[in-house]
Structures are given as structure tokens and as C-alpha cells.
Length: 197
Image (cartoon, rainbow, N blue to C red; front, side, top):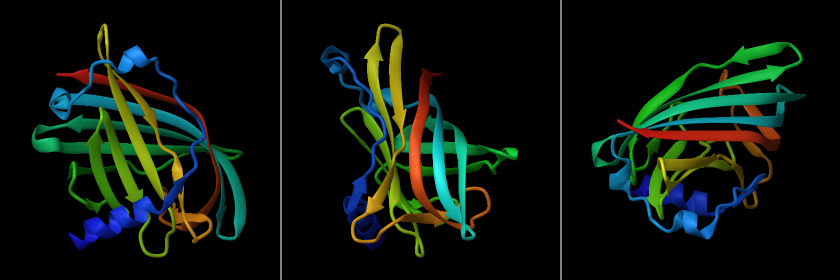
């Protein structure tokens, strides 16, 4: 329980930097999507961001292409895998595929040791991730669901968050776990598709 409180306490202290918004008509949210509606769903997400970081004392700029696949199982379990590809002046560099299984509402750790908790409320699935010791800040990954004429639809976002009073966002790089500082993170595009089996 202490880990859960620590994770949420740090998450609440984060000030979000949201670089884009998705506008939906009020009627699109007329019918709420429940967690039970999502059981058995397969969700594919993708995003392209421009990132400016400091790594090994050097300023670096590149475009990040992220893909992910999530499956919602019985009892609120979420099995997912994500991969990043960094595209820069020297070409494309793929990162390792990171995967894991967690349960909504139960705190845990991701493959890099960061504190993570998934929550579901008001038709939105959210992953709060707080960067571990030596890191600062976090990230809020959001998948918002709505009903459409052809079934479930979804929208994806993943802004970073700065921890109040700490300064820059710092974490281990997704590619090689080297400490980095994130100076800028801008969304270029996102996509999300959901299918029920």
C-alpha cells in the first residue's frame, strides 16, 4: 500500500505539459464505455514525437516513433508491449521491445523499474508512470474510449509531466537505460485503434 501511495502522491505533484488536444463533440460521449466493455479488447497505439534531450552531456534532437499493443483481459489485467524507433541525422535506431502485464488499480513496476499504476475512470484508461530514484517527473499515457456507429473508438496521448520543485524531467533512456534529461517533447501525430475479439 505504501508503494501505491508514494506513486500516487508523486503523480499528483506532477504538472502536465500537454502539447496537443483532441476535440470531441458532446454527443460522442453520450454513451459511457465501461471496463467490462473493454474485456477482450486489443488496442494498437502509435505516436510520433519530436524530442530534445541531454545525454552524456550532449544536446540531441530526433523524432521518436512509438508503437504499442495492449490486450485487456479478465479481472482488469493489461498485457502490453511497446517499441520506440529514434530517427535522427544518423538514420533510424530501433529500441528493444518492452513488455509486461499489470492489473488496473494495482501499483507495480515497468521493465525499467519505474513506478506504474493503471487506472480506469469515465471511459478513459490511464497509465501513470513516475520515474524511479535518480529520475524526476513522469508520464501520463491516456487512451480515451467512445462509442461510434462501427463500434468502439479511441484516442491516444502520452504527455510528459514535470514534478513540482524538481526541475527538468529526467529518466533512463528507453534504448540503453543511460540517464537523460528531457528538454522538449512535442507531439507530431498519434493514432489508436481498438478491436474486440
